[in-house]
Length: 395
Image (cartoon, rainbow, N blue to C red; front, side, top):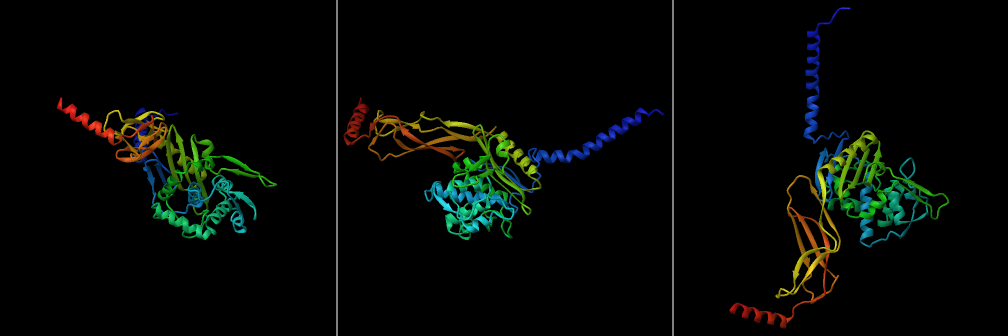
């Protein structure tokens, strides 16, 4: 066997190294430009929902089919009806034949029967956990009388939220020409849904069984596997059709910080979950939670008369944590808004609220209460104070 010249080997190694550097450097540069994030899905967005700050976008305004992520709007309208008192979670509805049929032909279903009576809360579980098209239709018919009327409400609410690139054709996300939205628009309605935290009790449930009034119990399993496998994940909604591919609007909270990720058009559910997990982990690395108001602690001295001894301390009724971007200098301001029309303030009485601003933008507020019983100064008190002040000035 002939000996290989060492110089030849060195040249080959050097050439290989140079070629490798040339080949991989553009990929590294791209990764650095995007904060090290490379999303495979067609469209994506990452948001810190408290402030609405967007941390990452990829084709976020491209109109795409959303599949069952559509149900974020269905749940939003349902939760708004509940929280406004229009309906109650305990209210009962009767499932129509039309609703039942929406869960047939291989579509996502809660396995509802025609004439079956279920509560609003049970139907919400069927939407949030099992992604039931039958459940979504039953809710639409209960709230608006028909799915067509409900879809109008969906589109009206979308416009109110600034979802300019969204058109809903149904309440479930079944593929229909023209039924489109964007990752950006999905983030808007998802952020709004998060203002109704009760829904997270359903979207964050992995498995549930509904058995009351049925011979065969309904077993619900969450389509969002991140609820089980990603720390802190408690919602919101997945989606899949052949047209839309794999989509998700998902949220998680860790150490007081909540993030929201939207993925559209992923080729597989594994890619969808991987991309969403990567985005949420990136979000957690960028933000931290800070307690700015502590329950039962003094916030501000509130004077209720001209005399220095006429005051009470405004105390926080509960804790208030705000989310701040790490490594940035932020200006935090507190502003107490108190009902000053009262003649008497009682210990423990809620007398207003305290607003917290971050860099001039409202970030949160909490109710405040009075720490003592105190009477507001009357005419004679003010008169005595004026005389005393006059005397003190003449000394």
